[in-house]
Image (tube, rainbow, N blue to C red; front, side, top):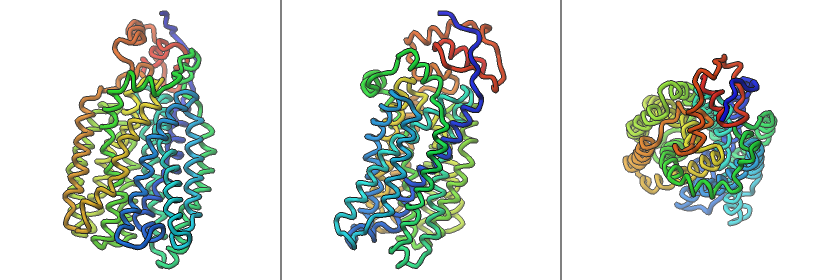
Length: 476
């Protein structure tokens, strides 16, 4: 197979546009997704369920409902993304999330329509879950496929920083809302963050329309190599990878335990002020937004595995320290440990997975593989607040089982990551391919001196044969 020594130039800003779009689109979409978590922890138990001791437990359960829908959303979005392209699916997920969030803000309460209220909110939460099932996997896959080989973790980390910024926005919005007089809060104040999602959705939609399909996916289409049923190919040839990435994603329970359960535990059981606890969460996630790209840069330099696993080890240690400070209502220590847990330890792993997880799969099933594996793992994260509530049992001193629950999930993720292949030196065109794949042999036969080193601004396109894509990227 002949390998061209040159190729059409690929504009440098393709990767930048994808990264910026990933940040803004994810931030605005996950603003919608996470305001529901804050509302469930603080308000929905009083609004959408019959009064009683089970109201809070049912409210937490609605958070988990979306995580049930996420695997279905991953299957549908993954199939469409691997068949028709990443961009169209990302526009679809955005519209679905925005419209369902807006409608939540319009819902009548249990006092108005009785049992129909919790049914409606569950239906709309399911729609949010369908959207979320395709959002971050699609954004990660698209950005990764646009990025230069040696900067994939850096560029994809902006998608995760966007999600963390969405948490910041949703938390900041609820600080003034939560401080409203209770009668006004329950009458109309809680609706404001949900109705505001209409503006958020329009902004994100306009930005996302600027996206282009990645060259490596266009190459697959050009050569008529698109898989007709990606799910069949995925589970037939890559089922071990699916299981491994699912296990690697279990650490994400830290997110919902801190942002949902700890918020309720601190305010309802320990007695910490609502506004103060929301501020802690906001500050910790602001730190995560800043740390995400730094973690990505480090992973591009020394590898995915050392950064990812180091973050998990720190999470195992810090989750105990955080809950100890929380149970003692030690405000300075809550701030410090919250920042270290979310802004440093959790981000060390969280910012890496948008590169590390899709890098485990070949381009033909990358969207499906990333989405389905991640969403299966996130099922546990979705129900982590309910499990944690049951473990605590209303006793503020009974936090150790919750911390241990989180630590065990992180340990499983670490073991799975240690068994996964290191991918930071693998060219994008060869990611996920088995050693027996003929394209690997074609790439290994490319003479090193047949590739002209070029500055990053003139990086060649990966459109064309796989061997040419490998040669184009080898100079990085």
